[in-house]
Image 1 (cartoon, one colour):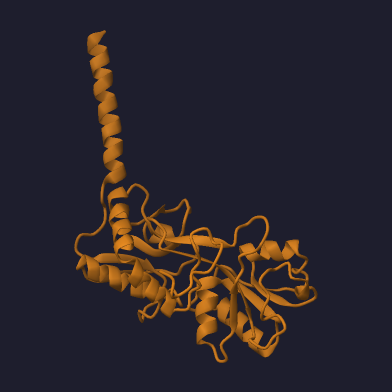
Image 2 (tube, rainbow, N blue to C red):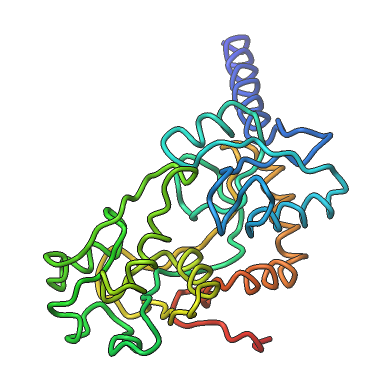
Length: 277
């Protein structure tokens, strides 16, 4: 009996010890900061290094004192499987918290969907999709995105213009098409994910008004905490990135602000003022 118990204890020790080792083992490259990125997905990333993910990757590579290397793949179906999953790279620089395909680091910014309109439009000061002024208007929305559900709830989908959700940005750009439609009057206004809408509206001529949608009632939520994504089980790597995020948050914020990204408070209940401590 004692022999059996000893054997069982040994087996359990090996099993759980091996499991713990697997959970914390680092599979990341030691000779480069390897980033999984889309080659044509501004303002996030592109091959020319012009996106905010590119700038964050450059910052982290500098802090790690490692060369920066990219694995390029369109951020559409199969992106995580063909990049992180195949160990071609070690981190996705911007990934929504809670997604089951990756292990999330601590978040480094919070943003929301935004309402975009011409500055002289009667809709320029709209702050919620339940605003009565939107009734009968043609609003642009990315099909299948959270705002589409809220628009349906408020009776706005019937006249809405939908734009594709999952595309290869090398050949199609729904957000840029929406902004062009706002400018030429094809749609009265539009709803976009904040980092996209904020950046494109800021750089457009004329600049468009961008209002974070913080007052929508019911699901789905309209704000998201953005993290960096690593492979499930790579806890040591995750902790290292968490430490880097914490130590370099000010520089991270400066990059995000430069790109016009609406930055929200922790619970998505207000905009962080640029001069806030």
